[in-house]
Image (tube, rainbow, N blue to C red; front, top):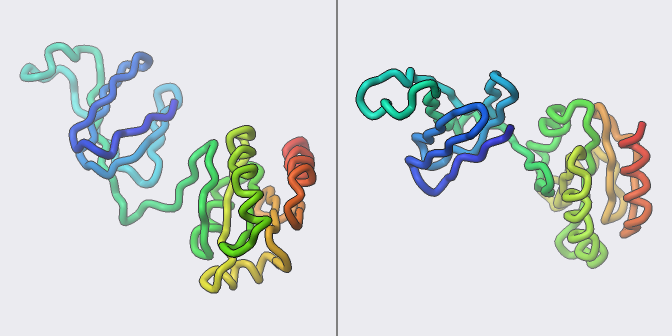
Length: 191
């Protein structure tokens, strides 16, 4: 179960139905965490603290539930990826995200701001990210700042799509060839 904590209010609360939890963000910049069964996994280095619900003051109606305070630690937060969206990366965030993806398929769109075919492919690439929720979709602007990474990945033309699995480039599609990109993603996902 993934839960998003609202970022607009410093005291926003969310009550889940199963398991019964009340989440109280003490910082307006808290973002999210995920929970599977009784184990709480914190994303982006969030700190978790629990309090007993047996307190007599404001807690009478909360018997049997757990009160959790979620605090952000933005200084130690690493790059994050949102499922169903394309994440912009740079030379510093690309490899940490790829390593964190582990055995998941990662598709990287290498583009430039001035490239016409890149602009045509961008909305189609976004649609693919919404379709293949088990795939991580990234995009890299091959500008001067990211030139070392583009060179490391061997880009010669834009757009270039690199498909990675287990930290290795396993397929490449050059040019605005949507059908070839879909076929390559399907091929790597099924392997």
